[in-house]
Image 1: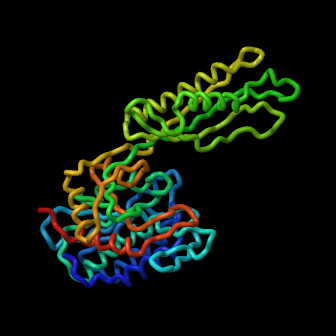
Image 2: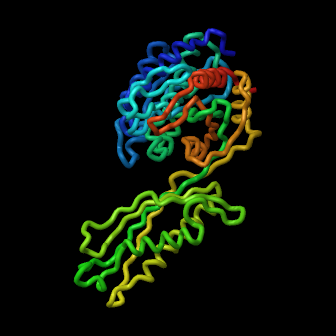
Image 3: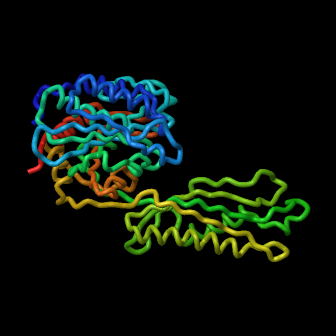
Length: 394
């Protein structure tokens, strides 16, 4: 059991320092080195520190792979993994954290704070440092600090799983309420739609052209009219879709010859998620067939899809969920479970064979200039993490 000497002041100072370090996705080297330096000052020969090569598989490259730290256990029990991603969104670059009552906020009104997810990473680090400081008995532990979560869960997707040490129970910190255990999340597919029209002079011979814009507009209108765009509900099956960006054309006097559109589709139901994708494909190809120029020629459509992450759900009866709920209750908070409509590192961890429960650490207003971090919730998250890191499975 964690003793009463949990150092709350040190935990807050540590967080303030981590919030001050920039580290947008792909630029996590500085924050990774800070974590290492903090741990090395308290570590002994029973701690190993390594990076994997996830950044080499990332579409943007990046300064470093995932940071993976392993502590040799002094209690015979299955290995546990604690994790929190270390990248932030670009709006957090230049953030200066300040305390205001029970909250930490950004000093400037032009930046976010970066509590997503420096708070989660600091929860994991604090648990490890308290174990080392207090000499607490603990099972073998893995501290996992993924990179590039904010641009599509890249670090957890491409983690070198063998470096994690085969953990039996996995816990992720990335969210608001410390008492809420997220035990499932939706899946997502991204689409890139390339619409090829036929260029012609829009003033002299518009009839010779086929507008890529018109093809895209008709397809989107059909999706909206038939209930396949936005919030989607077909009987008992539900999901969402969104047109995220549209780029095309360079001149007002040319019938638009090409257009690229990006979109995403989400659903907890894998088959229904694929059905939504098929409806997108159907709508765009039908729109391309309908548009012809004066010579009977048509445009065309090319669609690429990428499985960003699959959905998952963990039964409440599973040990990893029961352990998380018990730890929440041990700090005096009511415990609840939730299925998320957003993607988490836990999606890929579960896909790799490591079912992972995600807990909160006080974040609110993330990715905006109104971001705040609730200090009492953050400290409770640290207590929960310390409990989970020091209690062995029966």
